[in-house]
Length: 168
Image (tube, rainbow, N blue to C red):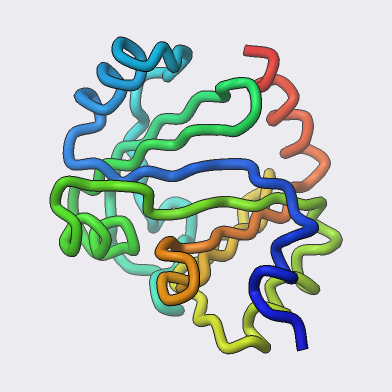
């Protein structure tokens, strides 16, 4: 049986996701102090609009999010606003915020195999999204890794969007 490290070893690290209490302060710090440029204005997201599940059910949740590409990986910032989600849970446990998830990507055709391998190893799905650009599953891997592991199965349309974002 594979362990989680073997399961994700062949995937491409795509994103570091921070949950923060103040997205504007986080952007200001990353842009100013560290020179991480290119964050667009944060977008207001509703879980219900994405049919994003939280422990198997679509529930009311809202947050702000923005992300940029730094030349090797996307940096995503999320500020929970209201409702219930894995982002709200994280900020409740760590009020100062921090790295909440690491996202690994692959073509959508391999999504089921990888996510099933994680399920078979006993890792629970915290949230899922089936979007035209990607299928996403967030696994509770806090115990072995200290963060949630996101698996992104990227569709052909999603790969085109990623290429555009990487170009700036």
